Length: 131
Image 1: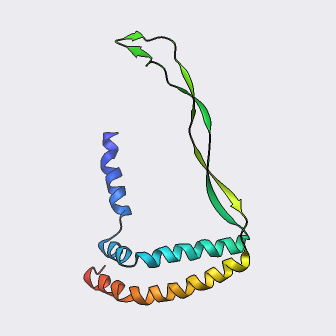
Image 2: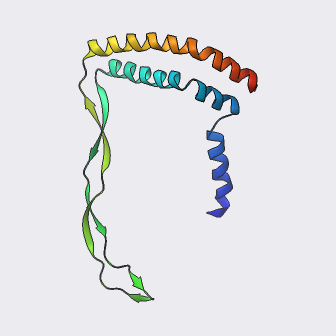
Image 3: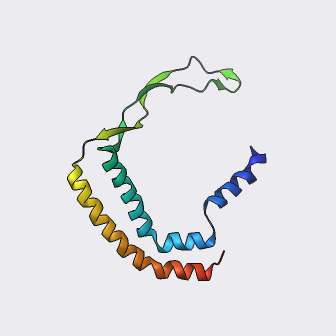
């Protein structure tokens, strides 16, 4: 595992982006959120329904008794418990397509505002951190 630690660290650093990308991401955060929401709404309209994540109970037998070995000797038979390990399911959800289209129109107008507001920040980041 230790041999892979430097590689994992490099992977994490690469995922952070360049200084310019970090600056833009920080300065135009609302625009990126709006873009993601617009993409999601367009996908919902194209599909005809939304997708929602729902936490579902998932009861499972797990080992909960004494450890298998204590001081080098068997601690006894394993004990099992019934424990809830919740999981996430993605389920379809009905939507009102008329309301979704109106919401999309409104978000696209707000996106244009955010683009205008973010333009100076993006230009400043590009000037400060040229690539």
